[in-house]
Image (cartoon, rainbow, N blue to C red; front, side, top):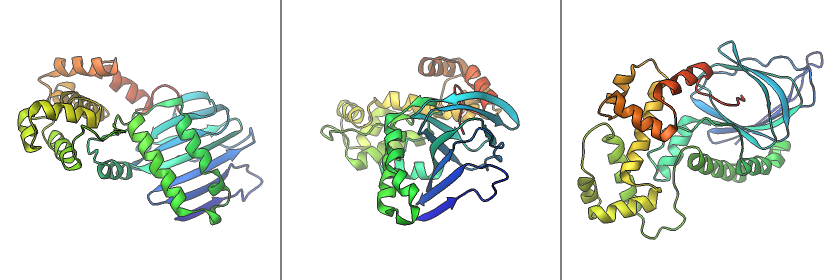
Length: 302
């Protein structure tokens, strides 16, 4: 476990107090300041990761820029959560006192976690912003003693908190389902085979009956057991996976008709109907919002 601390070193230019702990691939940082006159922070380095920020107190005011364009001017309440994709360029100016805990989580780390949990269907997290999340608030608070005295931190404890955060984030914002009762569910090897098969065939025709046979189950029993394991039917799982892939494609300039075919839909109108039924907005509207705010809509925090 790597330990970091960044105290203020130049009193002529006020800076926030920063303390960090790294356990495995995840870095947890507490950043705080009681000042109103902080300078605009340097641009956040682009990374193949996402940032999860939990506010420990009410944060009244800040400004946020994406690629040099102001996209938000406002605040966030205590216990609110922000999930931000760091593959884009962000810069923030804190205009009021604040205190938050940030989890810097590489995409590869989340994918590895979900695969080890037998949930290979993970694609990405929903980038919710400004939502109160008591679970992440509690996990952030649990790490405060470790962040206060990083040289005394217990590495195993920090790692377990990070695992709890990954489980909560992947289920709450990644759409994954972890059944409490294993009765009537697929065996681990069947879950792995089923999800790998569905991912490999998400844009190709196939039969659920053939998949059930590979799992050595009847089609009717397979459907029931799959739903117990994943909280949705195979057809619904596949539909949501396709829409998640569509969202990824919409961040690029690929034509909608081409995205529809790439993601296993009959045509653009078919994709639009399914996308709208699941997200309550059209693919074109989703793309427009993503381009306006770098994939982050509603309240923003970095």
